[in-house]
Amino acid sequence: MGTSTDAPTRTLAEVLALHPLADLAWRAASEAGRFLLTERPDELSVESKSTPTDVVTSMDKAAEHLLFERLLGERPGDGLMGEEGSDRASETGIRWIVDPLDGTVNYLYRIPLWGVSVAAEDQDIGAMVVGVIITPETGEGFIGIRGGGAWRVVGDVCERLHVRACTSLGQTMVATGFCYEPDIRAEQAFIVQRLISRVRDIRRTGCAVVDFTWLASGRTDAYYEAHLNVWDVAAGLLIAREAGAEIGAFGPKEDPGSFLVAVPGIAKAFQGALDECSAGLGINKRDA
Image (tube, rainbow, N blue to C red):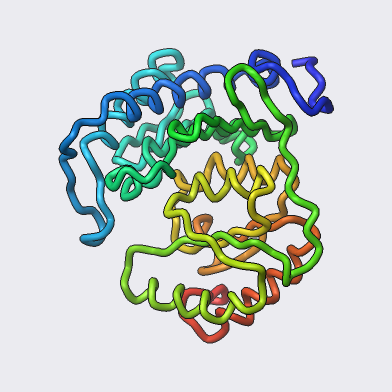
């Protein structure tokens, strides 16, 4: 626990030593990522969830089962919440929140922007303390440790992450995503139409965990989305915050899956622009 986080690079072992849960989170997420990358069948079994465009594959379920076994195999008293239905109360005060395959539609279409997300929540303080995101097809991993920084991992080398020093709204590269509900998607498209002339450009990867890591890595300057689930954001928000991003409000009141994340230099201006662009729309009813 005594390793300094000031240096721009560290070994993976040094970063994992910053928190007692980091090593397990990293190993579990990495194993799930390898499984999804190497064991993908030619024909995936696909089912619909909330809408016909919101899908789950047999690989999502298998990866969540793998994560469940690895995490609770070593810490059987911990709680666990997963996208594909895993839900177990904690006896230790630690709860694992996992998204076994974020960006399922990308994965289905063999678009390489998808990832595995594993976060450890300390329920005694009500906060995520470790977050790991693996993006297997890019060869990258990302680690966030509460008070210990955000790190990009390639091989055995960890690079300390800091968000970009953007100070101009007009030079802001923005990321966003769309909900699966048709009515909400229409509102989101309208916001993009209003917003795009105020910023440098807007990107849509189709994968929330990629969006978080891009912002933390300096590849974008702001990211906003509404109506995500806790497993979509648990690791990503921690990584972004530890990289220096500011978290703001967007979408329904007290909905943790509705948010904006931005670099400090444009956070206030972007919040104002997004509020103006979503004014009058149901998606941004924070006073409800």
